[in-house]
Image 1: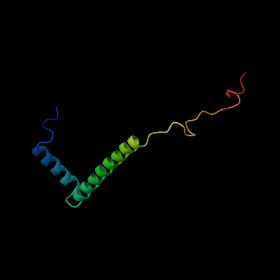
Image 2: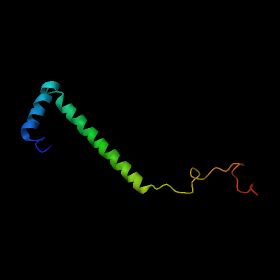
Image 3: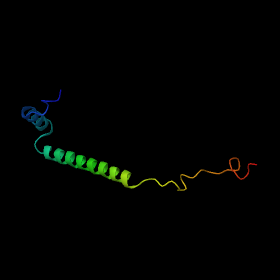
Image 4: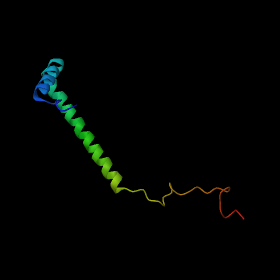
Length: 78
């Protein structure tokens, strides 16, 4: 389906339409912004993946311990 999507003639047509819509002065700014956005997305995905791999959740933290109340305290049950 997408075999011929990025043929050179199609890319030239897309570039011509973008040039008409945004003008020659604004086109480099849009390209730079798009490149910065893609770079930031890649960095955030890379950071997220490394944090998930290197930071396992320890089991005996206060967040993971059960809360003991008088109603469920095993020492109070006879």
